[in-house]
Structures are given as C-alpha cells and as structure tokens.
Length: 107
Image 1 (tube, rainbow, N blue to C red):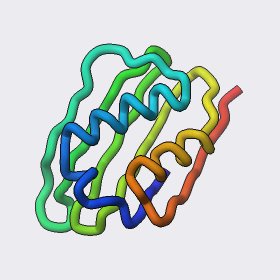
Image 2 (cartoon, rainbow, N blue to C red):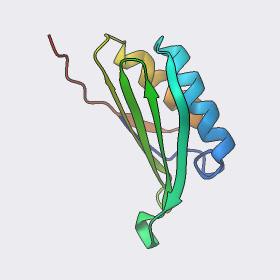
Image 3 (spheres, rainbow, N blue to C red):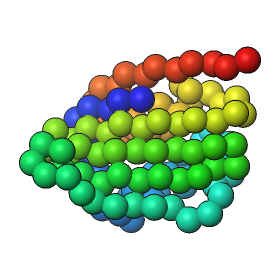
C-alpha cells in the first residue's frame, strides 16, 4: 500500500514506527517473529526510515519518504489476511489523507 500526506511526526520516530508494526500485525492477525529492524538512510528526496518485521508466514517491509510524508508498505504472507483491514489500520494510524492499495492473492 502507498499512503500519502502522513503525519510527519509519526514517520520520523522509531517508537511510532514500532507501534505501527505491532498494531498492523494485530489488525491482520499475524504473529511477529524475531525483532524489528528499523534504520534511517538515504539522501535528499530518498531520506527516511525503513523497517522490516518477519512474521510467522513471511514479512512486512516499510519505507517512509520523509520529504514527501509518504509511506510504502509491503505485506507478504502465505496466510490469507484482509488487505483492506491492513490499509484501514495504517491509514488511520499514520493519519494519511490518501491511500492506494494493490494486492495479489496466491492460490
């Protein structure tokens, strides 16, 4: 999912990013596996935090674009989850004004 016009305070704080991941996993009924990795890197228009969380059925990866206050969230899972519940939670949590979602179901 792509989220636009996110609350700039939330996408710049590792504590809030951790809260987002924990809440997202709960919202889509996924169990986290291992620790959360959060790193800030990039330059100019590419500057922002990235986060990666393993889940028992695969992983969640996020990149935050600080200059444009955007979030790009990928959830890969071999277990079904509701993609609309995921975007609803993330949009509300990050106070995003607009979102786009793309999903692919594997059988």
